[in-house]
Length: 361
Image (tube, helix red, strand yellow):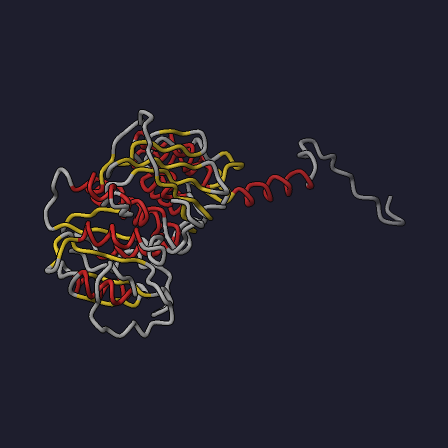
């Protein structure tokens, strides 16, 4: 299991609320990761102890356990092992859903081994998600953060990229089996996921895998996650392993360039004299990057139009800038204004003869 430190959520220690973990499956590592992300983990061994901790009675006498000392009466999330020493997690989830006090609690079911009937059983008892070991502790923390933004009684959740980045969200959603969509509030951006796969994406007129890459790079602001059936045919298929192995490394390079490299709002243009000098040492297809810098487009606009992967195009633009092939457009504009203010070139300037001195013959 990863250590849960990637893409840490912006939650100060203890302010994320508390999370109830029921059972033995990897809970020390998950509890440690939840604590690092700002949640207070509370661990219990089985179903009866969990019900006592939550103050829910299944119809029998419960052990006399003291309630949690947390400031919140109920947890942000309940994580339950599918196999418990005094029952099973599916039945416990059903009991929680049947009690008005706990009916709205987000519940994640975790199984040591995947079974074909588990997905249907989890849906039948009203579980919010079904995960199979090994569980990434960071994904669990992301799901806990997401579930804290539930919109009333709907299966709809509000979040923001500043506290829950889209790539972290998608990694967590793809670890489960639910279906639904993510929609950005301020930009044209939609991600569609189904049973552990991203199947469609749209962003700024693009659709498919290119739109997905650009969404995780440029998508920002508030967004909404809606769970429910997604039956339309998708345009591509991406699982969590591909996201982690192929997409995330490029995104990490992109973020490093954004912090240390060219500002996305910068307007650049080409110095063609310098380009002609450097051209023999540059790749043949570099012109596809150069021609997009016309003095009007920003670096961000170039990246959204270029057909190369975003990190690759960003790296190419940065190198061209360091070589002097790309220069700030404002410098060229200032040079042009200086030429215009100097007036037209004087090609035939008359030479005046010196006036004769007084008394000269």
